Each structure stands twice: as structure tokens, then as C-alpha cells.
Length: 258
Image (cartoon, rainbow, N blue to C red; front, side):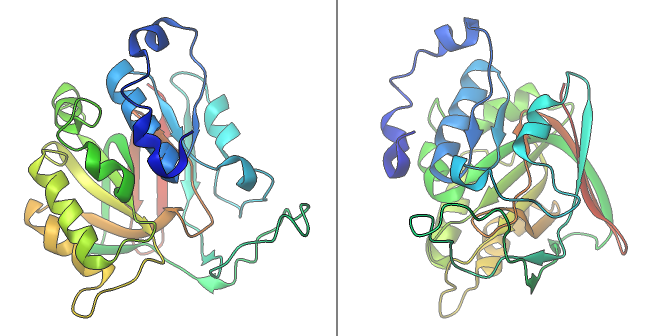
């Protein structure tokens, strides 16, 4: 849906008609998170940050839920995902040469990291977020008014989840500051950051960028979680209630669709 300039579409959609129609799932990540965010904020409908079509045939490691498991969860139901222990090395399968792969080489150790806050925590809120590069231009507009969404759900609070595709650390720091100034984190209980292969700057890493922009919020910041552009991917439901647990022996997120 729109790819690099998905932002072209969001003011052309008839949100009243979408809200009134029989609901269905919109699933994707990266550029598609532009529409996912706008649809949830403007209509109140849940959207699903999960696998793109080409990623769907891949098997997932035990503990991660494919998008169709999240989508099949009934209203009021809960599904739980557990942190992956290994990620994929950088690179892609050559689908043109061989369109049949169903297994990813998950060979690089990975683990969630608490960048700010207590090393052990259990924290809840409503999920909202996506890809920094395509969502930060929406901050302060009617299509990215996370401040208002947070106020609407202030009793639950938010878990704002964000991931970086390719921008350097300085650009990411500026984008996160802009989102902060637009009120994205005013009702946030925590910030969740996905793994990234985006480049560090000379004097600032990607983790440093998040700390520079967001540590002053004095809420937990958890990095290298299993979503974004470095597989494997979890499924996150925008607008769904979630609880994240991090302690010595557990890394998990449970989501309830209500």
C-alpha cells in the first residue's frame, strides 16, 4: 500500500466509510505502518503490525505468533509471545531464483535489553506504533495524533513501540525528539524498540539516540525486541492491551483484544 510514499494515501481514505464497514484485518509493517497507525487512530479499529505477504510462508521460532494467530484471537481473548533467542543474519532470500524457502537461518544470538528503567519489570498499556521513518512525519497531524489516543486511553496508558529501518542515529534522535514534542509519549508507560540494522553515527549509537530523546521521560525503554526489519517478527495489535514482562528468566508479551 503505497510503499515508500504511503503518506500519499492517508488523506484520501474515507475513514467514516471504513469505520462503518464490516471490519477486516490490515496486516503489515514498515511502510504499511503509515496506514495501520492512521486507521487505528481515525477509526478506532485495531490493525495488525505483522508479517508482509512475502514473509508469511516462513516458519517462526517457538514462542512467536504468526499474524493469523493474532487475527484469529477472539474478542476478549489473549495470546502470548516469548522472546526469540536468535535472529536472522542480515540479508534476504532470492525469491526470484527460488520462491520456495520456508525456513529462516536464525543463527545470531539476540536478547531484549532494558536501556532505561529497572532490569526486572512488568508493565501494561495499549500498543501503538510502527516504523520511525514513516510515522515521525505524521506526528502533530490528524493522522498521527497519538497524544489524543493516549488521552483517550489514559486509564490504561500506552506501550509505544517503534523500530528503525535505515536512518542513521542522528536522524533517529531528531525524529524521536519530534515525536516526544508532539505528545506521543505523554501517556506512555513504556517505549518498546525493535531490532535494527540501521547505522550508528560517529558519536551516537541507535540505542544512544533513543536514550537521548526519551530517557528524560523516565519510563522504561526496552530495546532489541522481536519486531521491525531484522527477523524474526512478533505480531502486535494496534489498540490492543498488552503486558510486557522482563526479568532474569522471562521475556514475553501478552496481548488481549479488548
